[in-house]
Image (cartoon, rainbow, N blue to C red; front, side, top):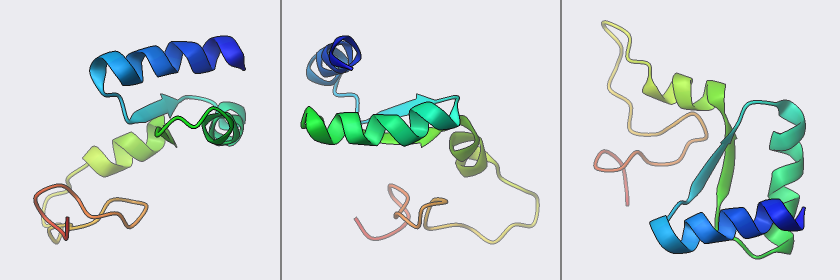
Length: 78
């Protein structure tokens, strides 16, 4: 886990990354533990979560929260 944590710490420090997208359920389950251990302020999510948050269906009621119930920037409470 240390090489991955160091690589992620680098992009957090250099680019301000705050979300890491995983494509596999095993990584999605393992990485939050790694982030907690290494004290990295990064949220872990999956590809389908990103797609689901990005989809806008015709006639859909405007959303103020994402799939996790977190406020959307500029639309909900901040």
